[in-house]
Length: 428
Ligand code: URA
Image (tube, rainbow, N blue to C red; front, side):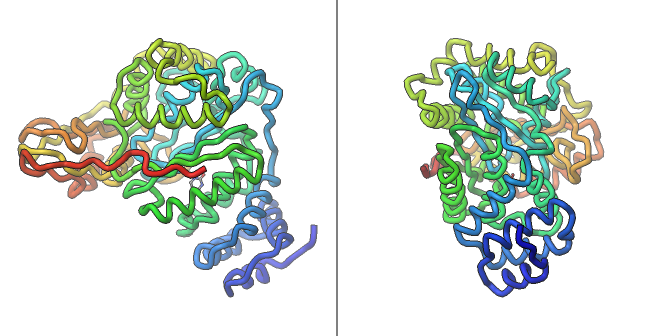
């Protein structure tokens, strides 16, 4: 590999230049090995955030991050593979019903997930509220489970794009998360290295998402779809609303419970709609659009796959879920129509109650979270419960209440409410 100098690479990007393939290969490799220091990489990340990267640079950056670790290969499985990745939202428990649902339709789902950081929850944190369930699997266990059950949700090993692990942690503490080239390469390096045949990206837009507006979300989606297609992965993206949180719960155990309701054929309409929309895209990408996932929710086979998936990872799907020690009810301030429920306000409240973590080594509370008793468009009655806050620690309620303040509007009864679409656009 051609040697470069970190300062020369930083200056090239600082001054608005393009990085060469060789500079990119070197800087990622050297950073992974500890030759490029954190302060140098953080300076380069800021230069990329401010000056951007073109498609060639983003593709090369992604390839270099994939090359920093191992690539998985599921081509030996007896069924096609498809995965889904969400850019992160509040109350976004969709992976939980989706993976077993798609498995029940005959497509294997190898879902290597992370833990939550900040106000968006992590899939592994949610599943860890199921008694006994374990996130760490060996590759052999993973392959075995994909053959027998068809779905695995587990922790990504240390060797899956290790450069991204280092860089993501650095970006998190240097104000450089929101750069589209860095988000796109971070997500796609992991998904391409994971070896899925088809990939559906759920790109969230709105107050509770990284991308606050549709043009930026579309740019991120188009960048990721291009990276996936170039790597031979059948990739599509849905832009979906994240100005309102999904469903009626945000937290860990409360989101598992809501997911089980969906698998039982019930659950909130928006969670069902998004789960089915993503399942249809995954099935189409894997060449199985002859199967209707709605049938598999209705006939109980998705629930059977869920139970098998939980049991295969030592969890007990029939055990009671943990319940927070303390609860606090917020009542509706007036009678009327709930016209706004802000995803960021709810996400922050759940996080402050203990459902999320501030630093990656912090523990999370399984029972903590927020339950809301109405969605925008619903009628509410003065004095009736609007939110239930849940935490093991009563002292957390004040800060959670402060984050909900100004996060919802109740308009006089009879006020018209026009919901926007949940699925805003499709890119593929
Ligand atoms: N999720 C990721 O994996 N990486 C990012 O950069 C942002 C969200």
